[in-house]
Image (cartoon, rainbow, N blue to C red; front, side, top):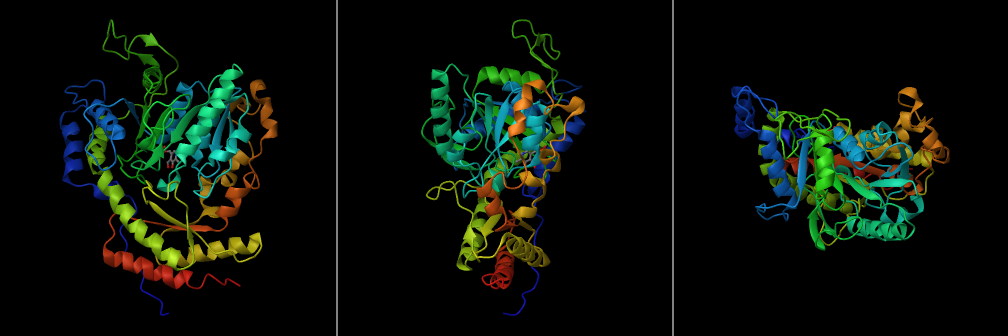
Length: 459
Ligand SMILES: Cc1ncc(COP(=O)(O)O)c(C=O)c1O
């Protein structure tokens, strides 16, 4: 086969590349009012309140349907996904002496948020979705487990139906032993707009058995609005929960630690002290832009899904095994990334790693923005040096904390999660931009054929 031309691809940033006059007008509207702060200003437009209200309707909705008028969800907008995770764990009561179960394929913030709350991360192995394997949870649970954090990576869903059933089972057994229930925090920073089937509720079902947007199965869901995400305000984060008391805590913690007193409002940060605030309010400019982006989200995701499906089919025909979907019948993944496993070749680990790197390098020459997952920076537990080395916060926390001495039994080097480790050294992926023309898709397919056609017999 002749070497195809390098395709001329659009940038990969799904939300930001959809900016048009509507986002510009929204940002300028805030600037003209000279009121960029969410609670007050010369002429505050309360864009953040409006964004939270819109998001509550969006997240309650059925994909493909208009947003419902009413929502059971409470939403708090913050200034980053990392901040959202830290606040969520704080609101869930995580601290010294606690363990948080997390998957080994994530982003460093999923782990740093646990460490910053002075708790111990406990790694759970993945299944063929590359996300947390529901059946691997039980063996990692101890009486100290406080929260389970699944992370739908690169827009690919977790098997949330099975996971929530498992958590409800575990919590029923804990209740019989007098132990508090384990809570579920979904880190959906990379999966806004995805959906799955199942029944929400970590202790008892709290919603129908059916289709739900990711982030609504557990007790709290978080999202990021950073520039790589499906919608973007440059920076930003969102927390959602159905639980009014949890919302009260989140609301206080995202600000100065106080909540407004409904009986005697003072028009200040409130006067009921709940804890120590994180100071992570979202600005009005971000909220105004995010509100516009939210109206485009389903279109952005559907565009990625369509391209993803075609590219996935192509790599399958080339002999690769695409990443498994949580739900084959009704997949709700966003299509942000097309991941595929290279065929088995009987070679040792070193050769497999060399092969993965060579494939990624060849795809990179065509500008496909590939990653060989073993080298996917701090998305992979064993690439996070501060985790492997148990690097502490100030005063040696959390590792040297007397309440956390049990951490000695936990390790974070490669080898801790055998199933994920094996998948990472055989999996490569390419980005799926949300604005691909059919000509550009053809260009990607030709490059994939050229590079992957020779992969079957690496020796
Ligand atoms: C899985 C995951 N969690 C958390 C975050 C943190 O979000 P932010 O960059 O908005 O702080 C990210 C961002 O990339 C992420 O991918």
